[in-house]
Image 1 (cartoon, rainbow, N blue to C red):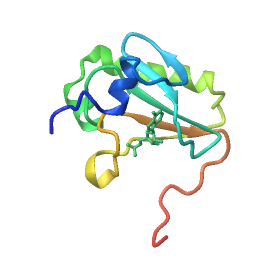
Image 2: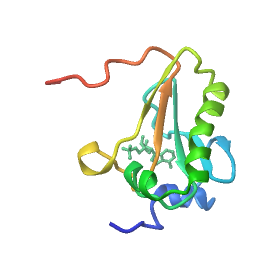
Image 3: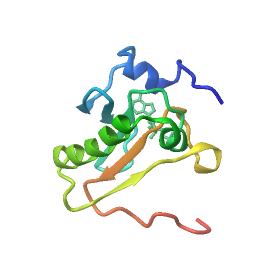
Length: 120
Ligand code: AMP
């Protein structure tokens, strides 16, 4: 699968679609999810063109990976998540990934429900 420059997060990075920015640096953008599932629900994305967590892990530079993980600490402070949160990366088809640009969901603001409910 090749990277689709028209995916919605690519448009957000280019400034073609507005977003509620939480954090930004040279490599990373974090913004509120448009359809929040918890009181805090934001998405952390690299600015580079990576399809998924797998693609990012295999192909991102050390600087990009470092920036991504350092950003999470900043976001935890900005969103006051010291009591905890859940980080989720839906990945590819089996993971139910809908937007084909790597993103990490950060969910919190109250106690998260059980992660996977069997036979629900
Ligand atoms: P996923 O199913 O892991 O690919 O999640 C995609 C997420 O992107 C969903 O939680 C959507 O609500 C969110 N989303 C889609 N479009 C936008 C947008 N324009 N701004 C913010 N979040 C968005």
